[in-house]
Length: 445
Picture 1 (cartoon, rainbow, N blue to C red):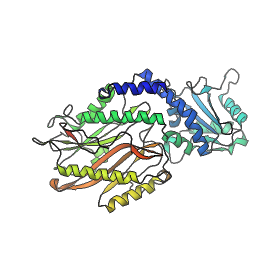
Picture 2 (cartoon, rainbow, N blue to C red):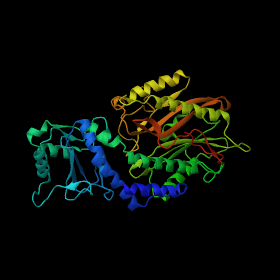
Picture 3 (cartoon, helix red, strand yellow):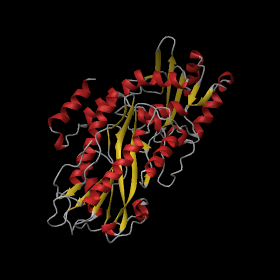
Picture 4 (cartoon, helix red, strand yellow):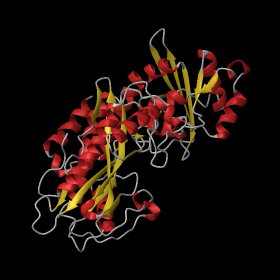
């Protein structure tokens, strides 16, 4: 893909300067990726899930979340009523990509509706179905996976009202196909993902530095809005508002570390504080989600105190235990239970709440715990791990700090990839605390 090489070149020239592609080149990359996914990934997903026809229906400003990920780069929304039909002929190894719409759906999906010949859009759709006589027709409805439940009631009823009787029994939920499309990452996307996470790490490193923080003056809210402004200045977006919080000797642990509504704002950052952030960006239709920690050095300190260094090691140990239990076909609930049991047997006090990450921040796929559901998640947690998927490895461990006469939480989150060669972090993870002011690099393995 020619535009991928342009993308890599731009980053290789001056990565520290956070060089970001201009909009035109971003569009070229996005459309290249879509073509690869339509031509090479989609046929495999349809074969694996047993569908030879997949129909997606959306109207402008009310897009199916799956269809939204298929939009051409220059389409910010669907137009009028947009109907996509994918037909897979496994025997001849072909896939048709048709748009029952007035326009081509970019360069990848060609319009199959001439309104002058057939004024009724639904009738044209039925003509396409009858000609191909599919064995199974997938529609995007799902009881439990929100992203796979994008077909609205009005369009479903209209479709079923026009569908001939002989095809009605062939209509099935395309839940697994939709999840597969959303959760599966291609080789090209993973090259790009590495760059996205690197940008995320670099923004956090700058936010948690003397460039942004002046102890005794700067507040946690100041840092949050600096991060938003930084992302905007780079021509990027965040998919949630960043959060920054403080743990220190005089503070109670409290629920504010989990609940946005209870998290104190405008706390003045002081020497001796342990800082934590939750931050993610959106770029080239992929999302990051990262939590890191920093220590504000006291006068004459050149590194964080040993008890905080050791506490971070406990967090890293929970990460290692957790990711070592990943296995293709194993459910999220099984991985969660095994990991919690193993970590507790070592004397750790973990909580794991890891989610799929990709075209959406809280994406589709298996859920591996929630912060308020450590006993497993019905249905979503029973979904098995698949290869070529990315997760926000989000967790914490509670550590008693005698020097502070209290417990703290080591909260960590990094993008991790599960593939045929096992687990790896997309762009490293934090194994050293950031410091304010900076004294050493923070990213390890």
